[in-house]
Amino acid sequence: MTGTRPATVPELFAAVAARVPDAPAVVYKDTTLSYAQLDQQAGRLARELIRRGVGPDRLVAVAVPRSAELVVVLLAVLKAGGAYLPLDPHYPAARLSYLIDDAAPVLLVRTSTVALPATATPEITVDDPEFTALCARHSGAPVAAEERREPLRPDHLMYVIYTSGSTGSPKGVLVSHEGVGDLVATQAERFAPAPGERVLQWASVSFDAFFWDLTLALLSGATLVMADADDLLPGENLHETLVKYDITHAVLPPVALSITDSDGVLAGGTIMSTGDACTPTLIAKWAPGRRMFNGYGPTEVTVGVSIAGPVEDPDDTGIGRPWTGGRVHVLDERLRPVPDGAEGELYLAGSGLARGYLNRPGLTATRFVPDPFGPPGARMYRSGDRGRRGPGGALHFAGRADDQVKVRGFRIELGEIEACLTRHPAVQIAACVVTGALADARVVSYVTLRPGAGTGPEELRESLAGQLPEHMVPARIAVLEQLPTLSNGKIDRRALRERADAGRTAAAAGPAATPGSHEDVLYATVRELLTLDTVDPGDNLFRIGGNSVVAARLVSILRKKTGVRLPMRAVFEAETLAGLVRLLHEHDTTAPEERR
Image 1 (cartoon, one colour):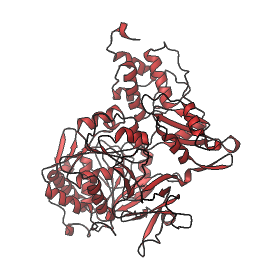
Image 2: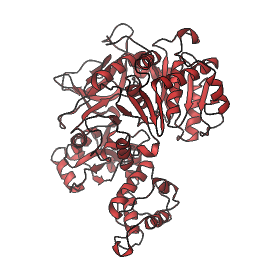
Image 3: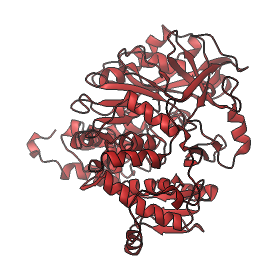
Image 4: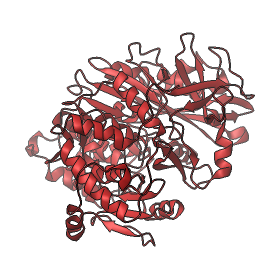
C-alpha cells in the first residue's frame, strides 16, 4: 500500500502555490519567480498548449536551455495534461533527431537560441514576441479539469526519459504520475524541504534526477536554483555556485563529490549521493556537518526506490530501505527470495514503477515481469543489479549482474574488486574494466585518491592481494586525477575500457619544455587527466579526449600549480595546447623573477 493518495503534479503544485504564493519558486541569475508568478506563466502557456492539441498521454518535446523559462515550460506541459520529452540542447543533432523520430511528440517547444534538426513535428518558439503576446491573452489561473482535452489521471504519462540501450539505440522509459505522490511524501519525511530553503538543480533535464530536484523544491515550497552548465562543473565552479546561492539541498554523483571541496558549503544542509557507489572516503568528506544520504533507483522507477541515511558510519553504507510506496525484492534465478545476507538480483515494485519502454513491447515484457508478491496484476522491474538485505532490513548494492566476467577461466564480479579498493582509506572512487581476451584477459583498475594521500598503485595492489584471490587482483592500477564521466555524472566505463584496450598509461614523456615551466605543468597535467602517453603542442584538448569536466579540473590544477586562473571560456575556445600555454603566460600576474 502507498502512504499517500495518488496525485498528479498539477494538483500537488497548485496546493503549494496557494499556500506560499509570494515565496520565491525559481531563481536563475538575476531572475526570480514567485510561486504565484510561476503558476500564472505556466497556466497561460498550458492553455495555449491545450489549444494546440496537448493533453493526457500526448508527448511534448522540450528543447529549452537551463533557465527559469525551462521550468515554466515543463510545468505548463504537465498542467495541460501532457508529458514532456526532454531534449538537452547540448546533445548531438543526430541523437536529438533519433529521440524526436522515435517518440513522435505532438509538439516541439524550443527557444530561438536552440538549433534543432529539421523535423515534421509542429513547433513553437516560446521566446518569440508574437507567441509571448499570444500567451498573455490567456488566463493565468490554475487549469481546471474541464479545460483539458480529457481528465488527467495518475496513470497518465508524466515524462519519457531515454536511457542507453544494449543494442546501441536509446530506449524511452514511460513514467506516469502514479508514483509522484509517494515521491513527495518521501522527500517530506526524509529531507523536510521548506520555504526559505534552496535546492540546487544540477542534473541535465534529460535525466530523471532533474525531476527529483524539481519536485524537492516546487512541491514543498522551497526555491529551485537554476544555473548554467559551466557554473555546475565539478570542482571550483560548483563550489562557488553552492556558496553564491547559499544552497541547502543538493543531489550530486560521487564523481562530482570527489573533486569538489566540501569546506564552506551546505553547512547544516542536506546532500544526497546517487548514480554510483558512495565510498567511505566520500562519506568521511561530506557527511560531517551535514545530513548525507545515499539514494538508489534506475530510470525505470519514478527517480528512485530506496534511500540510506542520514549516513553516520562510513564503513556501513548501503542503499537503505524502500521509500514510501516502493518495494524491493532480492531474488534468485527462480524468483525466490534469498535469505538475509545472501546475494540476489534486485526486483523493484510499487507505485513508482514505469509503464515500460516506448514502442518496445518485447523488451518491456522481458524487464517488467509479473510480481508474485504483490496484488493481482502487479508487476516488478528486473533491474539487473545485484544486492543483499541485511539483518535489519537495509539493502546493500553488490554491482551489476552484467559486470560478471571471465578472466583466465575464472568468473569474477568487478564490483567486488571496486568495493575492496574503495575500502582503502586513500581511495575516493574506483572503477575496474577487463581488457584483452582469453589468455590475454586482465583486469585494469582506475582510482582517484583523496587529497594528500601518499599511496601509489603498488601499495593498493599489495592491499588487494591480501583480500582477494590471485585471479582477481588487477594486473594494473592507474591513479587518475578524475575518472571520465558521462553527461549525467556517472563514470564512463566505456571510455575506461577503450583506454585500457589502447594500453594507455599516464606517462612522464611529453613535449620538450623547461622543467617547472608553464609548458611543463600544462602538458604533464593534460597527460595525467587524459591518461595519454604523449601530447603535442598542436593538439586540441577536446579532440584528444577532453570534456567540460576535464576542462574544469584542468583549470583547478593549473591554478594550484602555477597560481594562474584561466577563464573557463578561454579554455573551451583555445584551439591548441600551445594556445593554452600562451594564455597561462598572458594571465600570469606575477613578476618574471618570481616565476619558476
